Length: 145
Image (cartoon, rainbow, N blue to C red; front, side, top):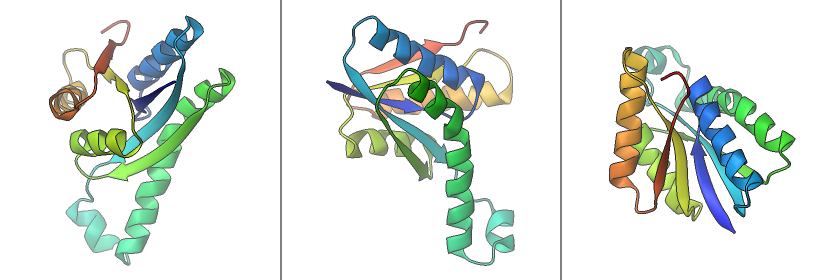
């Protein structure tokens, strides 16, 4: 059985990648999943305003858990097994680390369309993952991109 990492950021594009993974299983792929969200490093304002590092980590963990909820609901509805992980740091490197730590065989993630800054950032994350991963990476282009 394949173990597949599904990076999610709460966006509709990321859910499109999750739906694509579910379709692959419906078509016969034997797989279970690791959902991952990576919270970027804390900015200076967050570090100054947080009472301590532990609070900052808890807030980051909660934000990541919230962003995983939609993807978890999709996999639960499809009755598929999954684990969830919230990481923090540079998204590309952290996703590659999570894939290695969980022993994933493949990564399925969204790629971005053209245009806004958010898609440029998503594009750089997917590029970083493709460059850093030692396992296959499937990029799913959201319909409409």
